[in-house]
Image 1 (cartoon, helix red, strand yellow):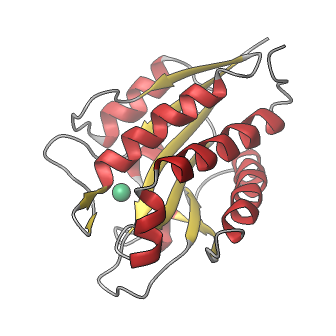
Image 2 (cartoon, helix red, strand yellow; image 1 turned 180 degrees about the vertical axis):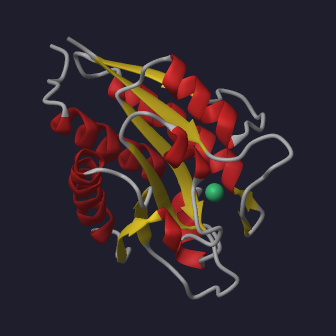
Image 3 (cartoon, helix red, strand yellow; image 1 turned 180 degrees about the horizontal axis):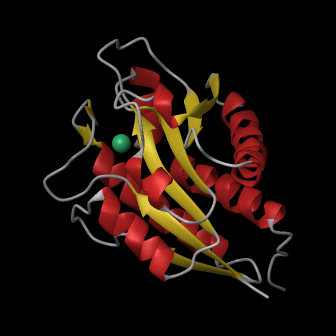
Length: 193
Ligand SMILES: [Zn+2]
């Protein structure tokens, strides 16, 4: 038995996402997704697909349609947080407000693991949230997929210290490793021998 994880790097193409200190969210998201994919390959029984593998924009509809057509078991959307207030910092995760208990359990496990990893870098845990708590009031792709779906708000690209971490390749690697370990634990997948 194997599981299929659909990684969804936010934004792309003409949509840069948030920009902080000239670092573009779309680039951070895609790079993180590739690193998570690489880390997931170290485990037995996990396959990976991505909603975009290039610098192109995809609509929420295209993203969710792809995940549904692939019959993914988990949809993991990768974003950074951003704010016009440069003092805002921290990590948050989101599920659709209409998500069921299965998706919320997965959010809980993954969130707690990531939060304790980030605590070692002094990053605050802003909590497990519903998509109604985002600026747009909803995350359409989370609502349209037919599998558990979580969005990671990976630090604030607009915060000086968060931004330094986000542009650091070794931090990205460790963060990706933590996410992959979390997914592998949830689905009881062991490292390849
Ligand atoms: Zn975003």
